[in-house]
Image (cartoon, rainbow, N blue to C red; front, top):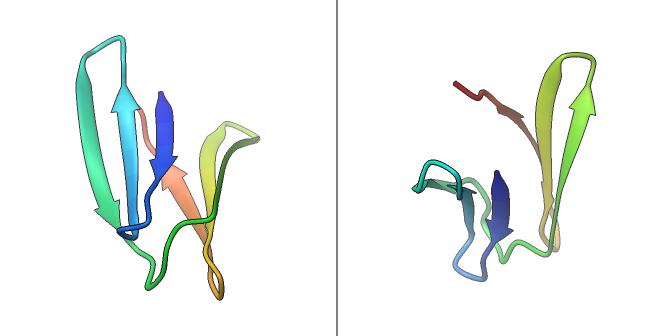
Length: 61
């Protein structure tokens, strides 16, 4: 799974093994940083912009 942050305020999740993708809007500004974090059995995604921090819970099938 690959996560990409864009200047268009999108978080794009791409599963290169399945050939699928999903776009998410959640920021009011350009995504500057993006990082996966495993906390216990949860996969989390942290995104930051110039004035926001988001914590996303990533559910994988």
